[in-house]
Amino acid sequence: MSREGRSSRNRVSVLSWMWTIVLACIPGVNIIAMFLLAFLAKRQPKRTFAIASLWLMLIVAVLIFAAFLFFPAEMLSFGEWLRDFVPLQGTGTPLEL
Image (cartoon, rainbow, N blue to C red; front, side):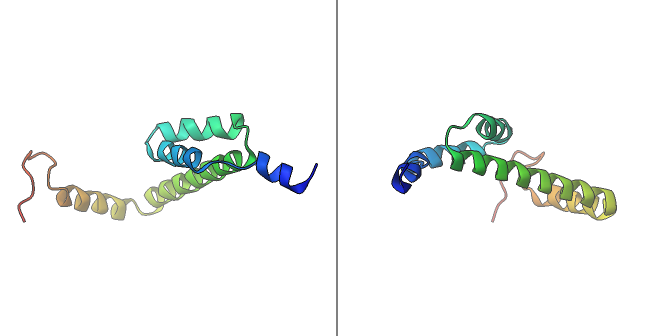
């Protein structure tokens, strides 16, 4: 098979990549979509992207777990700072600037 035949078979359209990225941005749906793409995608670039995304999600989850395990007081104070920083939480009125 020629070099052009292989590259055109693995080529993915821009619209297809856009939908993949939109699915990857939706919480909860992204994990399901990445597993489906990793195991069921016909195109190698999509399969590789999904596997890399799943590895990245796993690494971030392990780092967050380690941060809570090794720095619990700092993470709790950061959570309190975030709670004070969010203007709409509990009040129902927007922050006036």
